[in-house]
Image (cartoon, rainbow, N blue to C red):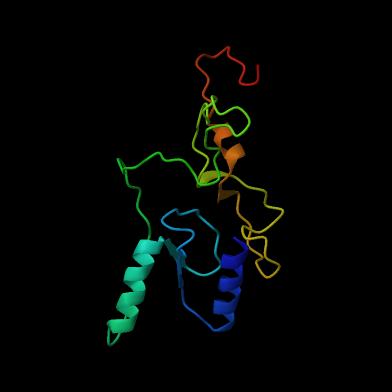
Length: 153
């Protein structure tokens, strides 16, 4: 995320109107949402190559960032995040990991308004919600099966 914040800062200095953040080859096709100052879209490595080819060959390249829409039934979904544990266990190879997996990528969750979404010093915005990713982000998805069930046994 630090690298994308630095790209935001550099583009603001250059008076950019928006940004297309393309994954590098190492990051591949995984997309993790990052907050940005500029209107931005994040595309995977495969799509990034297509955009760069277009920019190199078009006489007057143009682009448009539009409001995203929810898409349902997308496959493969769900998939394991790159930061999730994978097996076998290195100490006991007979134990396959993960035992249980839950969504922990790009979760819209409550967010402290004590800091900006990016955490950057020049970002003075505040928001009650933000997208976060990480192992702990799978925890808020507990669902009670009855009115008397305590979510923390």
